[in-house]
Length: 387
Image (cartoon, rainbow, N blue to C red):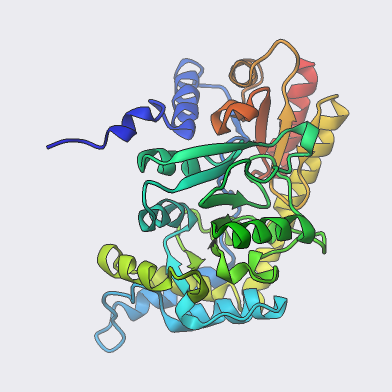
């Protein structure tokens, strides 16, 4: 037996596990401290009632022989896939076939699993900073990576790869910087991929936070994108499904990967839970949409509160609009991890060190708007006292 030695190139601790360990150690030594968690992007608002009702009905179905269901289709139920097409794509002028939409347990799993479709010889381009899973899954596969720096000098908009990239990971609205691409900026990436016969894996997990009209919600709003892009989406942030686990991936037939992905799913995936799929379906009902928009309005409000509050305190801040994340430069004399420790120990505030997202993340921390307003207001008061 031999192991995959590429795993030995990974950091000992996953970013969010290291944060969890430090916070747990602090709590053990300060059991009475009220820690404000503005770091990990986990939602805090309860599921809308129509979604909960749909889950109750689905559970009740499973309790009776005449309505019981077993294994779900590997690609998801047709009624949910068609609902996604009718609500998330057709109104934006995007035409998809039912066979091109695959229901999953969430974006995180698919972003890693898609890597299995490609040879280790493929060269990968990844934004720096970026969500760690893009890098980790590429390292696990032994692929060469080109990092595309995103910093204040280029307004966090990456340049096209210097060398030909076979696979490109793009996430917009971006995690962690909270920045976005306009239609024309995203079009340049699609044209690059078509010219170089590259594939874009487009992480659109935060598209529901987009407010500006010139920002595409889907990469397929760009002409020709269905030839060169796979799009991954999730109900986690848009609908509060971090505990429910449901999302989807679009693999257009024009990419040449649709049949491969279907074959992979049939071998390695037994389908997303029926209860979760009924919950997802309920998010498209009129009452479900209302409930979700209320939750999104709350998170958008906390993002605005945090970003403006940090600016008022003299911090250099990016994001916070069209995205749930605030990217904040740390004060002089600090690294991103030392400022994390300072906030935890002196203010009992948890952020996310930017260095955990890549070298270009050093000197920044990420604040998450997935919290309640009172905690955000309290965090700003504590930061004011620190200043």
